[in-house]
Image (cartoon, rainbow over all chains, first blue to last red; front, side, top):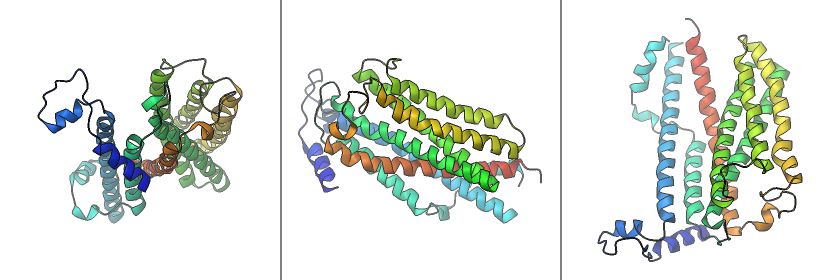
Length: 76
Length: 239
C-alpha cells in the first residue's frame, strides 16, 4: 500500500513534458496538464468519473430498494 | 401495495437512508476506487507492443475471475434448490448467474479492446480463448432463454437448476483447460509462459486486490438483482 501511495505521489509530482502539437503558451495549469504528454492521469480522471457515476447509481438503487422493502413490509 | 404507489415512494428522499447500506458495500466501493487509482497510477515496466495497455490486466482478468466465482456459487445454489425445493435458492442462483453474465460481457469487451491495440484486431477466430469464452456466454444466455420458456415457477426452477449444473461444468473446459492446449496469444496457453512468469510484481500488487474488489461488486449487484426480483414478484401478485 505504501509502495502504491508513493508511486501515485511521485507520478503526480513529476513535471509535465509538453506535447509537440500543443500550443506552448497555456497559462492555465489545468490546460498545461491536459496538453502534456503524460495522459495517464487524464485517463484515470475519466475512468474515475465513470466509476463514481456508476457507483452513485448503484448506491441510489440500493437505497430505493431498501425504502421499498420497508414500505412493503410495513403495509403487510 | 398497489403498483401505482411505487413512483411516489421512489421520489421520497429521507436522510435516515444515508447510512442504510451494509458496511461491506462501503468497503467494496472504497476498495475498488483504490484499485482503479492504483491500476492507472502505479509505475509499470514498458513491455514492447503491450506498453501502457498492460494496465488492462487489473480490469479484464478480474472480471473473468469474478464471473467464474459467481457462476460457481450460482451452481451451488442450484444444487441446494434441487435438494430442498426452496425457491429462494433458485432466485439466488438466477441472480448470481445474471450478474456473472454481465461481468463476462464486460470481460469480452475489455478483451476485445485490448486485442485491437496489441494484436491489431477486435476479434479473431484464430484465438481459442476469445471464441470459447464467447461460447460460454452463449451457454449461459440459453439458461435465461430456458427460464423464460416456463410459466410454472417450480418447473422453471427445476429445469433451470439442472441446466445450470451442465452450464457450470463447461466453464473449466471452455475457459481454462481447452485454451491451454491450443496455440494462443493468451498467457499460459500452449508454448506461452504462464501468468505468474511474465506479470510484473507492480501489476500483481494491484491485480489480486482487484479480483477481490470485483467479486465484492458482483455480490453487491447480485444482492440488488435478488431484492428487486423479490419486490417485483410481490407486486405482481394480486392483493
